Image (tube, rainbow, N blue to C red; front, side, top):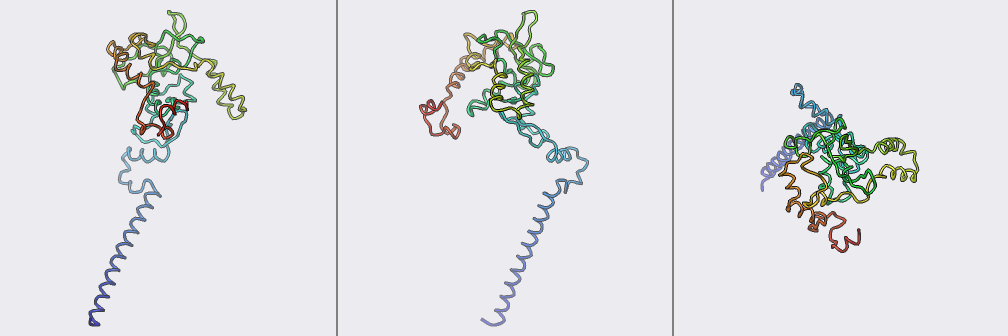
Length: 291
């Protein structure tokens, strides 16, 4: 190989390495500028859209405004995304009449990972008192009505064929008092006590907290109303037609299909792969012994 050919190859190699160096350096520089602009200033690159209020609101919301997300007994604050449907706390209608929600949130059933979705969907239109409270010990309510979520007063049966399913602006409550002057079952003493209990929680001892908690729940039953009590063609706990349900809907809720689903749900046999992680690989006998 001649000396001139060797120099030519070295020169070409030098050009090749130099070209790729320039390309990589340019790419690194562009990426650095892009990341700095994105992380450093959320409004960078958006000046041309300054008049677009949707763009402005989305940026401000991501950095300033928060919304509450309820998950059973826990509440989280998270950035508000305009029009975003995953905000559960915004999806559930505000119920400021039921003080149970102050501690438990609007979707309070969280103990069982397999059952909570089925139970929580009823919280859209049924108050906690229906299933969990007895005004008189061992005496189940027999009369029910609807309470307006805004005013806290009894209201007419909602028009269930309008709006989103379950979101009626009202909830079913047990009734007390005379037939001529029915009133929703209210736990006024427990409600007032619970408000003070939350304010003074940090100053109470563990034993005082236990005593206070028992007082707040003193009229709660150990075993709440079961699914089969409402979905039973022979003896239905809730009077569907009297509460405004159509005859067709009432018949469906106690039909063989629903009753069969409820019966299977209460035992709830599921494929092992769908079980919560702590129950995977365990047979029915092991789960029974665990309970």
